[in-house]
Length: 64
Image (cartoon, rainbow, N blue to C red):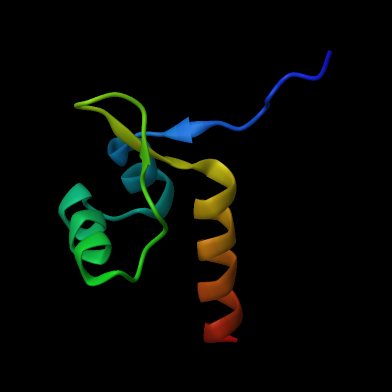
């Protein structure tokens, strides 16, 4: 049996990971410049770790 190892990060987790405020993440989402949210329940959303890591790597590559 293979387990799904994908991890979902909360807005706060992503903010800490990227060193920005949650408001900044909301602004990026509204502008369509950040990764897609994953709906976990009616009131809870998050972001896949692999999507956030890929987004960050793309930013790093663009800055080089």
